[in-house]
Image (cartoon, rainbow, N blue to C red; front, top):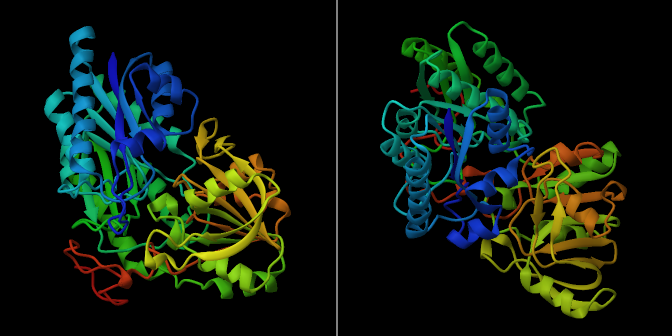
Length: 499
């Protein structure tokens, strides 16, 4: 048994002005070709790592093609996407000419990829693979929880499985699950059928944490449905509101064994229940000042502020300055910001050297919505070329690179300036600079939730704050152009009947 493996993955923010190019894939999480895919992801906690584990369990041969992931950012340039897609198809064709037809395909995708002129980039990619392998061979696809699912991709794939966790700590597990389904399909033990239930619903970050209520209630229902006879998998996608596409929003996908009516019944049952409880999935946001005040009242440190409106993990530029301004104005001590994307200041710090005191304008350079640059007279505490190793649980065992970076400190406020658009999934990179995160009193992270998997182990209290930045969770402020339906809580008020 031979199964092709790969994918092009991107979470696209339509409101970010910087386009995504091939170089962003290569310089981001990376572009890996052929055997490099296996070398890179063996033993890693991502879906492709799960595919590799499943190959060892089931004894099938992996045919590695092309795997690419660019950090979230703006629309992918059309010609660059077409070049990557064509390379994937060329590698598939070459692999079949050399070793014979593959028996199936496993794709590691995101679910919110948008290309210039193609609203559903993931659907377009799956369709291209489907045309290459025909209708008889199975295509199994893993997707992020933050997918904007469409009928197009459901029609092109054989089976779809999405993450069950946020932060995403189950990626390898979902990869193994999907590989199992594809192997069983190849062996004709099962015949997957799918149904999609779309919801006109925007689900904001604080209510998506799967280890906490109310999301625990949702996932309990998902797993209960998966235990029903004939049900192979149930996927909830909370959606990605910052992709301006017609199908933006939450959805449910059910996969059953040869029973399309059951698939529709299961997807509709969960989708209807989610809609009936829609008020539970949207919480008002806190300001930075209110979060600090509440954290002080609780009195457990460090107080961690998630600046989700400037989450580089979702495509925001990462140089919003509201939190930095607040920390400096309040003269906080033992306060840390991870990170502000500012390659210019990072380079200046490298030139000045460790121990130097320099006056620089930090952040606020990408977009007026991100706030103004902040004048700091800061000491260069450490510099780095950006290399580090993730210490998990997300991406455990993989290496990362934040580019030219530096730790700056003005009085009691520390800022790590970086060049790469990557969120702080954990304290590993800060630790490489000599920063002891657990000893801090205040930590601000440019992240929405992924940081919780690591920072939650030592945080005294955690608050999501909605700052002035591109990825605001006040969805009424976002300038949608392509969204074709009214959604809750923007146009649809509470208690309105689901249409």
